[in-house]
Length: 100
Image (cartoon, rainbow, N blue to C red):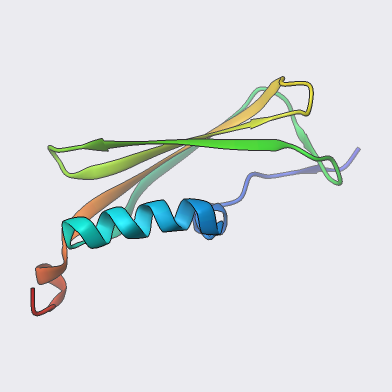
C-alpha cells in the first residue's frame, strides 16, 4: 500500500470554490492573506489512488486579523483520515504599497 502526504495549503486553496471565498473576503476588507501557520494530523494513512471527501470550514478572527481554515479529509464511508489547519494573517493592502 503506497501512502501519500497531505498537500500544503497553497495546493488546495487553488480550488476555485475555496479560492473565491478567500479572494472575495480579502477584496472586501482591502487586505492580503499572508500564510501564518499550518498543522497536519492523521487518523489513518492516505492511500494513493483512493478517493476522499475534503471539506473546509473558514472562520475569521478580529484580533489579530486572520482567517483560520480547517480541512477534514474523510473516506467515502465518512471515516475521518486527516485534518489540516491553516492560518492566514490578513494584512492591509496599504502595507504593500497600494493606493487604498
